[in-house]
Image 1 (cartoon, one colour):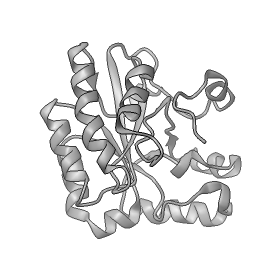
Image 2 (cartoon, rainbow, N blue to C red):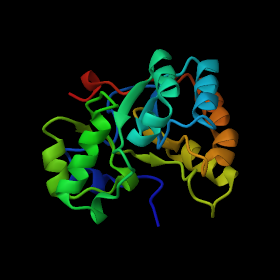
Image 3 (tube, one colour):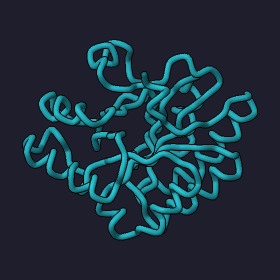
Length: 208
């Protein structure tokens, strides 16, 4: 069970997290979780380049360790990067000590002050500690590309129907999501470009 559109009451309940970038007119923030991997990330980079789009990639440290050249290519293309733990840990199922250690391990290969908790699951104590060094990036639109129970058309509809100016949208550069992503991402880029939107990477100065 997950929510495609994060309700305002949830966003208000966790005001220390970044859910969207208010005031960014005709601008959308695409984010990609769980990479980089050779099977998917280069395709994402090529597709974004076709629309002169910038995005933000929340990287699993172990994937960066395995695929450093792909990770470098993400940065070389002008995209933002973020820490997504070293082993894609579920914060609700991890002690604070183990979780923070895993984030630090990822920081050894991912130099960023942006952090997204895998599954969006993080305990208050973990968050409080991480907020000393990171902005915690959540989202207001979840594509559902990871969900085997929905069609690619439904995934596209999730984004088209709910994304607005300033929205942070979650996709995944993962094998599990790739079939849907191949269908959805070009259509999302085309749809919002036609409506005059631009696609930007996340930067700290937008979150002040």
